[in-house]
Length: 247
Image 1 (cartoon, helix red, strand yellow):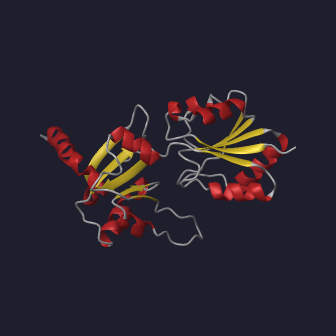
Image 2 (image 1 turned 90 degrees about the vertical axis):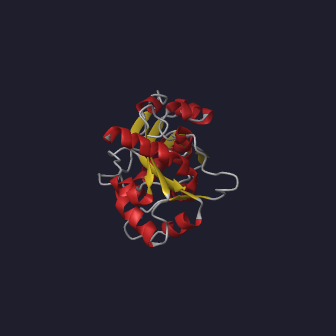
Image 3 (image 1 turned 90 degrees about the horizontal axis):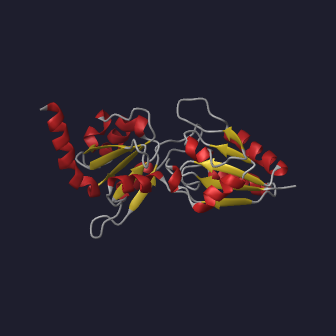
């Protein structure tokens, strides 16, 4: 028997941002392999499934990708519905290509179910569009993180070329990110928005300029760095809040 592996996007955190298809598949799943930081409310939808954590978090013990691949294949040979639950969207910085390639090479059907990615959820929280007519027509989703042995990322060139950039998995490297962008020519006064726990009730937002980015606190929560002129209008309000706190 060969079941189907569904690569399902869990979205940015809030359970009610799951697609209808994702919620249905979780309810049908016999086994769910899930990333770290998937909300318990989301996992509860997989009421009949065995739940196996295979998440990766920076600086912590992580399940090797080759081991995840093998476990997915083994599960598909024993079950009809296997869900690989990934934070955000499976096709963005989620190593979906490696899992798809491995499974298809072994004749195992794979279906991808999209999810809301963090940049879209953060934009909704901010109520500031990533694009703006006449001002921002291009958007780049980038990450400075590369695995050991991989070629160097070209994220800096992409971030410089786009009107608005969303930097994933970079909060812990904020000083290096700011320094690299400014060294490459990005103006130090470029507006920046730092969004932690996007879509959740405890979402935290900080506005600053690129040169001030290293001084912002991330507190270990999943955090997205957004930069571009579309956030310029938010800077005076942020400065006023700081002034009230220190005055």
